[in-house]
Length: 278
Image (cartoon, rainbow, N blue to C red; front, side, top):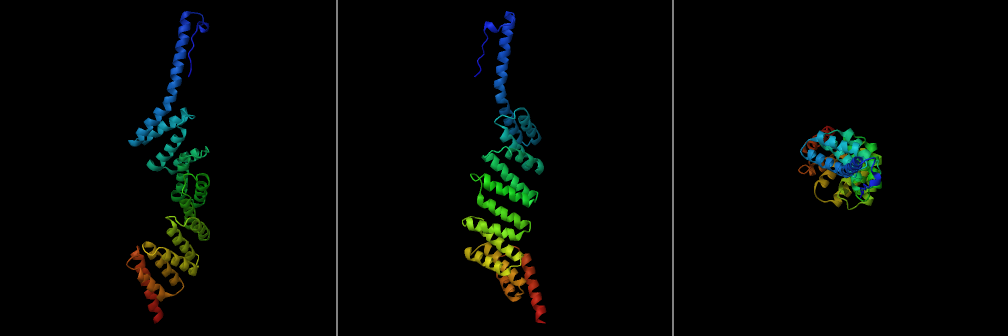
């Protein structure tokens, strides 16, 4: 609290100067206290603009907070809101990335920094398709934000980044880490499926078949069985075991999701068998 002391010893020259000095001190204090409320009011006004779809007005107010009150308690929230607004409402990925990165660079290990890091990893992965950088960002989530982050999901995402960029060997390694550490994860069957697929894409058909069979043993019903059987069929086809492949394809004919693709597979194998029999 600031105590205003207007004693005669501070009067300058005359009674009028004394009262003028007291007035200046009073105005100063009012301005000082009102400055504490200014960023709060701006932030609340920006939030209302955001809810009402006035995105540019909200952005202007958020930026005003950063320019005029950079040391206020609203700085982190403002950077995050700017990032979200550009990402979710204005579809400007690059600017969103700049705001999220600026918040993260402040070094805070809190929930809002964690959420910003999640956005950054997502942007590099799904929007910019920069899988190498996405792996770095997912690793930051694992290393720096264990309190809030889902380590299972982030390890899975790392493996999927390698899968999507075509580095199937490294993807197998990352999926193995996931499968060994997180047997209860809801992503476990997906990891088993993609791991087996990696072996298929690397031409290791027996290992792929083994992976697909393990998936079927663990999950005896649902789409995983159909997907695994289809994968086994592809492996058998690549090994030129056409009759076996055809039998497997027909087993999943009524349950496989992509029926059009399966029909083409069946037709292709039947045609090859017919030509072979001539």
